[in-house]
Image (cartoon, rainbow, N blue to C red; front, side, top):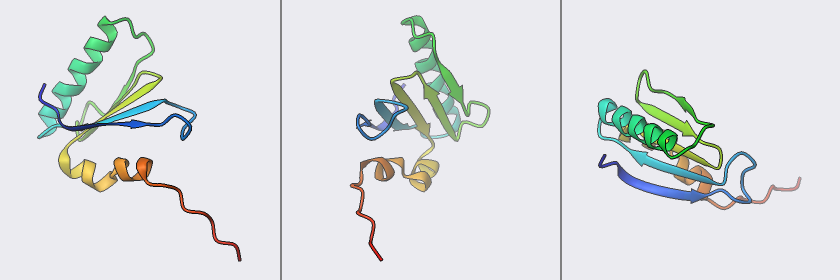
Length: 98
């Protein structure tokens, strides 16, 4: 589907809800929706039964949660705004003591 700038983030040890996060972009809303629909269809065909999809009506940001892996498909502007890559890959900073 020619998704763009696809990255995988290892969440093991960082999150209790998932092991991996995949973040990718589509060029416009229609492309985002097509990517998400095709991925969801392929996951169902491969036997993934627990599948939750959010955001398909607007297609600015579609989330596909299949348990161990969460896929985010964004329009470029929305991806830049939320910047999940930075949020999940930056090292935590220690809290200051007062």
